[in-house]
Image 1 (cartoon, rainbow, N blue to C red):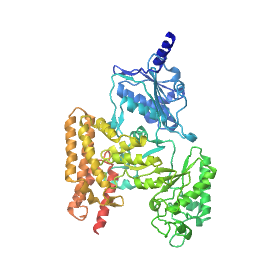
Image 2: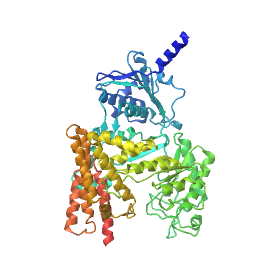
Image 3: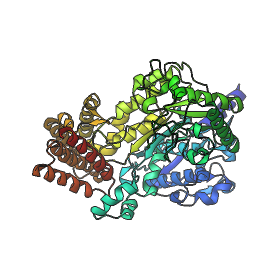
Image 4: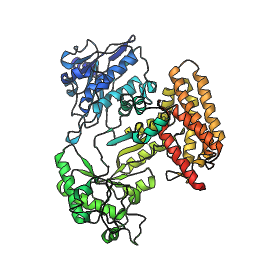
Amino acid sequence: MKRIAFIIVLFTTVLHADVTVVRDGKVEAVIVVPDRFASEAKLPATRLSHESLTVPLAAAELADYLSKSGGTRPEIVAESKAPESGMKSRLFVGPCKATLALLKENPLAEELIVRTRGEDLHLIGGDLSVGGMPCRGTLYAVYDFLEREIGVRWLFPGELGEVVPRHRDLVLPTIDRRERPRIEKRKIRNQALTREDTFAPLLESWGITVEAWKAAHPEAVYGPWFSRMRLGMRVDIDGGHAYSGWWEKYGNAHPEWFALQPDGTRTQKPVRERLCKSNPALWDEIARVKIEEFRANPKLLTASICPNDGGANQFCVCEACRALDQPGGTTASLSDRVFTFYNEIATRVAREMPDRGLVAYAYSVYRDPPVRVQALSPNLIVGFVGLDQSSIEAWSRISPKLYIRPNDLGPVIDLGMPRNHAAHLAQSVKFAVEHKAVGFDFDNCHGNWSNHGLDYYILGKALRDPDLDVRAAIADYCRAAYGPGAGAMGRYHDRLERIGDSIRADPLLTAKSPHAARLRTHYSDVALADLDNEITTAREAIGTGDSAALARVEMAAEGMKYARLVTSLVEVAHETKSAEYANRFTAVETFLKSKVLTSELAPLHSYRYLRMALAYAKREVE
C-alpha cells in the first residue's frame, strides 16, 4: 500500500503546474527554442516576417510582451543550452525535443498546443499544411497564451492599441489546451494603403506626399495586428480573375473560345476578357491548365476558375450560351450557363486531381443559385460575394463548400462615420460556417480605427471562433480600451449598434443607391447628442488616471466631430450649387485632410465614398 501511495504522489507532482513566470516584478523564466532557430529568435520581431521564421517570431513576440508585462526581458536560449529542470521555469517554444516527447502526435496545420508540465510551459503548433504550405500554429500558441494567461489585448494597430497588464508575480495554473481554428481561411484585407494612383492627385492637392502617407501607415506597425488576431489560413482559397491575358495567348488561334459580342465579333479588349462558356474545347483547355498548375505546385490546394469581372467586354450572346440560361431566356441571371461552365471544368479536373479544389465565384449576374444545375461537382468551392443569409442558405443546398467574400467593411453607405456592426458581422460568420463556409475574405478594411475599429476587432475574433460570445467580447473590449470609462463607452457602442441596425434595414441606403441625405434620418440630433453625452461621461469617469484610455476615448470624440460635419453636409446634399453646400463640404474636407497621417477615419477612403454619395445625390436632382 505504501508503494502505491508513493506512486500516486509522484504522478500528481509531475502533472501539477508550478510555472513561475514573474516574481517580484522580474521575469524569472527562460524561453527555449530548438537549436536551429536560436540565432534568428534573438532578432527583433520586425525582422522575422518571412514565412519560414514562425518559431523565431513566436519566441521574439513572447519575450517582448513578457518584458512589457513582467518588467524584464527573458533570455532566449537554444534547447541544448537550456537550464536543467528545477533551476528555473522554462518556456519551450516550437518543436523542442522536450515538447515533442509530451505529444502523442504532432499538431495539425494551425493547431495550437499550450501545456504546462511541472515547472515548464510548452507552446507549439502546426506550422505546415498539406503540401508543405507554411502556416503559423506555433505563433498562434504564443498569442493564445499572451491573451488568455497574460491578459494582452490588441485592440488596434500601434502602441495605443495594445493593452498589456503588468504582473508583479505570475505563477501559471495547470494548462492543457489543444485547439484549431474551425475556419480554414480567415482573411480581412488590410486596405489602408490601397489605390495609390487614385489618391496621389488628392494628396498632392492637400499638400501631402504619397511617401509621407505611406510612412504614416508602416506595414511593421499595421501588419502584425492581423496576425495577432490569428487571421491566416491552412488552405489558400484563391478566387481571383483566372483568365487575364487569355486573349493575347489564345485569341488568334481560338477566337471561338471568347464571348461573342453584340457587334458580331469575338474580339476582346484586355485585360478583362470574357469567354464563351458553352465551348467544350475551352472546358478541356482550362481543365488542362489547372491540372498542370496543381502538378507543378504540391502546395497549391485550390485554384481559381472564376471569370474576369467588369471591363469593357460583354457576356457571350451566342446561341449555345443562351441555350444554357434559365428557362424562358431571361437575361436577369446567367447562373445556369456560368455554373454549367464551372461544373464541366471541375469534372475534368477531378478525374486527374480529385484531392484539389476549384474556386468558382457566385457574383454579378450569376450571384443567385442556378435553376437547371441542381448539384455541383464535389471539388467546387463556391465563392459567394456578400453576407445575405438567405442567399448563403440557398447556395449551401447545392454547394459542397462555400467561401464568403464580402465587401461589407467599407464606408460606401455610412461614409466612414461611427458605427457598430460587430454583432451583425459575428452572427453572419457563424451562420455561414453552419452552412458549409470553410473560408472568408473580407474586403475594404480601410483602417478606420476610430469609427470602425470595434467591427474589425470582433470580426477578427469571430473568424477565429464562430461560436464567440459577442456581448462578452464587446464588454471585454470596452474594459480593456476604456478602463473606468467602459460603462459609458459600452452604452456608446450600444447606441451605434441600434443606428447600424436601422441603416441596414433601410432599402434606400445600399451600395448601389447611397442616398446620402438618408443618413440624417438615422444619425438624428437626438442620436448624436446621446453619443456625445456618453463620450463626456467616459471622460469624466477616467479623469487623469489612465492616459491611454482617455486617448482612446478622444479617438471616438474625433469620430463624432466627423459625424457632425457629415450629417450637416448631407442636409444640403441636393443643393450642390449653394454657398452653404460649398462651405459645409470644405469643412468636411479640411477635417479629413488633418487626419491623413493618423490611424483615424481612413480619410482618403472616406473622402472617396463621400464624393460618390454626393455625386449620386446630384444626379437625383438633375
